[in-house]
Length: 70
Image (tube, rainbow, N blue to C red):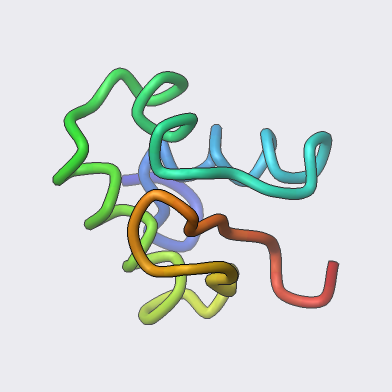
């Protein structure tokens, strides 16, 4: 764990979002080198625990995530 309890993968995702505005589960899997289940868990934690992301789009393949307030 690192700053404020975020994992290194989650910090990479936040940095990615600052440049690209949205991220998908698939992109998170690629940049974090993790399974779909781990990506889902990490993204859910960023939404529910850390209140940093919001979910948009359809549940499933159409879901994307963005930083709250962006």
